[in-house]
Image 1 (cartoon, rainbow, N blue to C red):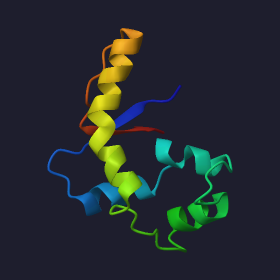
Image 2: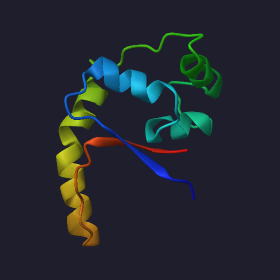
Image 3: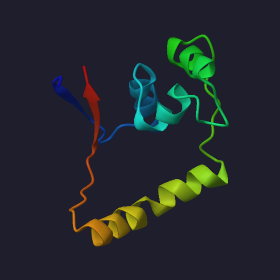
Image 4: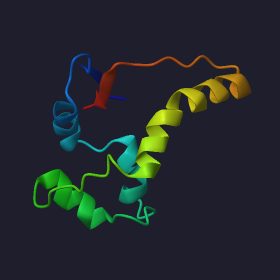
Length: 96
């Protein structure tokens, strides 16, 4: 397993955060990579990551807004159900 790189998100703007994620595959991209995302394709993801296509701004979509809003609740429920601790990391974690 490779070394984990931590990139602090403290004080990072949304644009800086998006730019930092552009050059890697994140958890949100996994279903697309596997061809399981009904709203995107592996080709579209490749085109976005290589700069051939500008990603659509989905930040105002209700499902995205709801997902952000519910993150603390989902983390709390996971902790209750599994007995595991959940903590917020203010970093982007990358594996080389």
